[in-house]
Amino acid sequence: MEETSGTVRAPSPPSDVPAAKKPRLMVPKVPPASGKAVSQSKSQKRRAQYNALPEPCSAEDVLWKEINDVLGEDYVNAALADGTDRQSPFEYHQELELQVVAICSTGSALAKSPESSRPWVVVVPFSLPGETIRAKVYRNARMHSFADLLEVVTPNPELRDDTAVQCKYFGTCGGCQYQMLSYENQLNLKRDVVVKAYKNFSDLPEMSIPTIESTMPSPKQYNYRTKITPHFEAPTKKQRADPNNPVNERPDWLNIGFNRVGTHKVIDIEDCPIATPIIRETLPAVRANVVKNLYTYKRGVSLILRDSLPPAPAVGAEPAIDAVSTEAETHVCITDHRGNVREKVGSWLFEYPNGSFFQNNNSVLPSLTDYVQSRIFAAPAGGPNPTHLVDAYCGAGLFAITLSPHFATVAGIELSQESIRAAKNNAVLNSIPATKISFRAGDAADIFRAVSDFPSGSDRAPYRPATQGTVVYVSCNVHTQARDVGIILKGSTEDGKGRYVLESLRGFDLFPQTAHVESVAVLRLAQS
Ligand SMILES: C[S@@+](CC[C@H](N)C(=O)[O-])C[C@H]1O[C@@H](n2cnc3c(N)ncnc32)[C@H](O)[C@@H]1O
Image 1 (cartoon, helix red, strand yellow):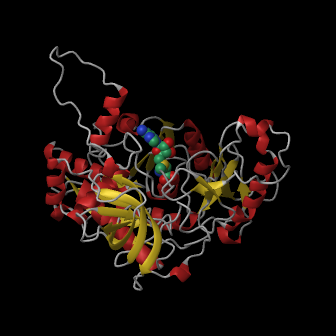
Image 2 (image 1 turned 90 degrees about the vertical axis):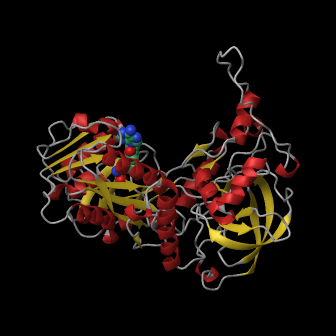
Image 3 (image 1 turned 180 degrees about the vertical axis):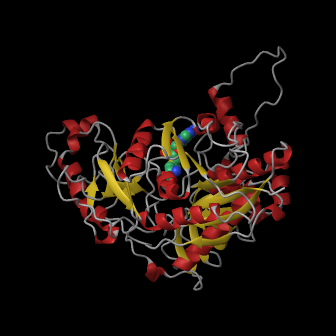
């Protein structure tokens, strides 16, 4: 699951000439007369990429669909047909006054071009629907331009509350998009993201999509992030060789932090208020250590700071972890990529290697696992009560372990050997007998071959889960989830083995202050 959010600048067109001045490039459509496959030259490939519509379900495609919504599909299709789709009305670095009309699922605002120019969308971060803004264009793309926000001329007082912003880097750092919104408004926006994802990507009729539930809030809205990964560029060879390098002093060129919004350039970050207190306390020492050893680095480095419970007590020693709440416990910060992290989810204990995957907002995890459990057992009356749980893509066993008391048999599958080792160890740590729970390394697509001892678990076709029961699909990418759910529902209608219905959809806020939403879809085999 990818937890980093932020606006990613779309790939540049083939040259750096602003689009307004660029000739339209065409891809040859006719194959060579010989019929032999001729490999494309690099420039042909770049042209093809330039002319192609975005990769389905990519971040660019999410934006593209919402640009279509703003401009109207007929207008966009006409521009594509007559080749004016890249004829931006704006010059590079042109300053514009704009009206924001929508907020995109990526977290950036969509503003419409002024009436004096052709209809066009300008994508601007940190602005809100209903606002008048000034922005400066930095790139032109198909039917839209990207611009930096210069000024909010007329704020939308119903949405904007700049006094809520808690980070001095907000507006520059690419990590957070929504600190100027009340939490309630953030949750509402995230619900809209789920709505739009299923409208634009599931290819399902409206009647097959349930009313999307309100977004499950995170108990903590700041100080929640249990992992951060600031990074920095290494000094050049020349810089390393300079005898006048200052000792223990950060040179001006060194930035240790996160990417500037809309770029891959690192900005220096001394504190991150969405991170947990122990991470915030530890960051200065980690930064100082980088500065101390700066001229030994030959490559850029991604640091890791992870909130953890203290190491396990030695055998026979008094246990350091009690069964009360994590709030009352001492926390430590693990900075070694190979270090061991310990974390409690409710009363369950998890251990995993620092460099491997674990969800990054501990405060909301009990709500998430409880919700998944409650949805599974909310099966319509008369149906069989689930007894077997398959946790596909199980990581260190979060769902398998926390849901294990409710099932007779639990099996997890996961590609990473390291995570599987952790999951097996977590089963032992939580005293779940091996007769009940098992974990195996492998491709989740093979899960129903792997758990052949499970009832009716013989169907191995992709996206076609076991022939009975409930599928709970938890995803950090609601757009690919919507696409997959559409495929499952349609496939199940056609293959005659029972039809799935999409019973519920709910977003979870794992990353407050950002545009990210985790989505939980519940699919149930219809009672025939
Ligand atoms: C986002 S993590 C979720 C882990 C776990 N479900 C959780 O919530 O903590 C997704 C996991 O899927 C694993 N994965 C990716 N592709 C896979 C595949 N084809 N088969 C099995 N596991 C896979 C990754 O290694 C990663 O641990």
